[in-house]
Length: 248
Image (cartoon, rainbow, N blue to C red; front, top):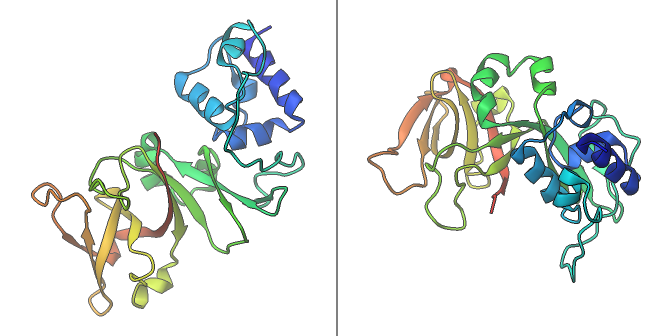
């Protein structure tokens, strides 16, 4: 039996659709059907992170049992993902127990350059892997996930946004830029800039009249990461950072 068939057997044991499996593991749509003779380590880690009971050795070799034996878990059982949803219908999936799974595209580091050219292209966005966030109620708006690159927002404290972490950003429509940004509520932003690219920064000042913002890095090395003024006319997109997922 191939790796693909073993994954399909595992999915079948969960009584979910393949799309739900791919979604929960942050894999691209169609990933399972495109598996060859091997599987990349990054993809393997994503699968095992989403399904820690899956036996890695069984998946790779077919030896042993499908599931690993665990003692006691402190995880909360959220139930199984529903099997009758389509990713292009809604970014919300209701989970047993009342929680809601928000699903949205993830812009990983390798897609940064392409995003600057294709951020308005629906096909490019659809091809991005998915990121998700569990919430307790429906939220309006457009959301994107971004992989953080570099340590400009890392100061070693709880508010850090370290390299390789993933953030959830809520799109801020352009007409909101014409009024004072709510910096007391949302301090940190993903900024899609014409020349600086995709950057995560704290905005410490917004001059509405001049159409400028001052961005600030949390990293205390101000020689390497000085504060900088940007003109909003050079900004393509702004996202409030509402959640940070840190890889351990």
